[in-house]
Length: 214
Image (cartoon, rainbow, N blue to C red; front, side):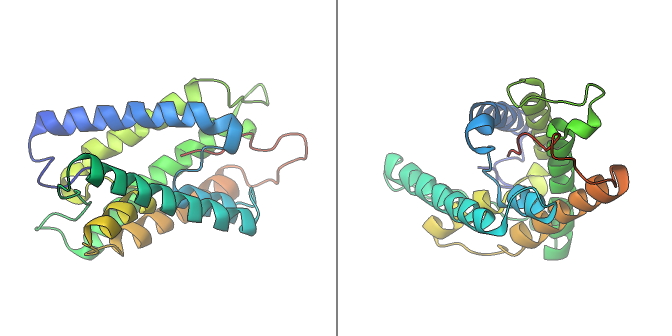
């Protein structure tokens, strides 16, 4: 979990960004076929807006994501003998508005990459498989790059659940709005650009997005 304090050292920031990118790549590659790999409420929100998953499913996805993040943070606290759980927070020189803008921009990049990686309309062959490692790898690279860019300023969350779970367990809910408003706006903008500007024609029944991740 990144915090501005933890990412003040350049080598620590690079190591954390690389670790997060590879971890996300692995998680997406493993879960894409089974469940779509929805581990991020911002991605679930984007796919709901795009009409790729129904609202009831999205609600269950988001509940699962929040519970997963909370239980993972609790397990980390127990495993670390009650040590404080690091939470994402904005740097002292940042405002809440500025933090939300950065989180919105990085989430836009992440969600748009998800669309590009798995939407068959962007492939000349007309089909992309969730079994390919290329899509998850690119998503991991983008996430790592976004962490490098904003980790020292906002923690590079891009995922409301990722910020929510540690905040609940630690009891530190400061600036939580930044990690909800920013990512959800970024996800909505990514949906608007990809679905209505880049590919403004509707999906056909035989070429849906095969897998939606992150």
